[in-house]
Amino acid sequence: MIGLFGGTFDPVHSGHLRAALDVVQQLRLTELRLLPLAAAVHRRQPIASASQRMAMLEAAIRDEPCLIADDRELKRGGPSYTVDTLESFRDELGAEPPICLLVGADAFAAFGDWHRPLDILALAHLVVMQRPGAVTARDPWTRDQVSQRRVREPDGLRSEPSGRIYFATVTQLDISATRIRRLIINGESPRYLLPDSVLQLALQGGCYTQSNADGA
Ligand SMILES: Nc1ncnc2c1ncn2[C@@H]1O[C@H](COP(=O)(O)OP(=O)(O)OP(=O)(O)O)[C@@H](O)[C@H]1O
Ligand SMILES: O=C(O)c1ccc[n+]([C@@H]2O[C@H](COP(=O)([O-])O)[C@@H](O)[C@H]2O)c1
Picture 1 (cartoon, helix red, strand yellow):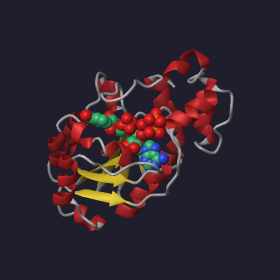
Picture 2: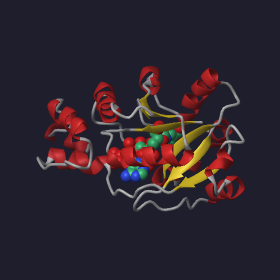
Picture 3: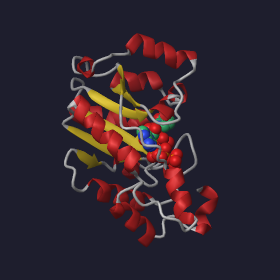
Picture 4: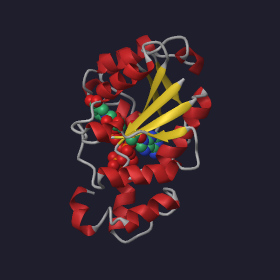
């Protein structure tokens, strides 16, 4: 069973990476693709360029063979709708194999506002990862989806290609890319919140500087 984990990854950090590995292990995923978005459809645009974010992601996962950086959203360009990404995976994999789409609990709280959310659920399972400070989805539509589709055991995801929702318990790391960008812009160190290799690239590339601090 494969997993997909999309994000802005501006930059990728240990909150993403540890949660990703926890899910790989709990669900016994054969691989997890990490997909940096090109243009966000729901938030401010990333500050670092596509190539900088991709390079930082590749550096972060270099020694972890089950984590794979996938640049299809960057190559596709334009607004990165998750439904389009899932359709491209279905074109490659066919209709049968289960696909797990990982989302943090904060992202899932807004799932009802995503583009074609029912089509997303027709294409993949959702694996919702707890995140410190994230609230549970409050809108009635999303709550209703959870009550109809929730499975309590990861094996419940293996018997169908899509359509189930599983809440995964992951290591709670109160780390955000926003905080990392702010620390760098303020000349402080974000060390240990992200891999050293990622930090080095962020600093060398001048990804986060006072001149782009407005967007930080
Ligand atoms: N510390 C964390 N623990 C669990 N999930 C996380 C964590 N940080 C991010 N995620 C999840 O990873 C995905 C991509 O997140 P994203 O790249 O936007 O990182 P972020 O830290 O939330 O960034 P920003 O601070 O710029 O909003 C989202 O589904 C998000 O919920
Ligand atoms: O397709 C959508 O409508 C949609 C709306 C909100 C978020 N997403 C995806 O959710 C992932 C996490 O988003 P973010 O902002 O937390 O980095 C990322 O892959 C986004 O493209 C997708």
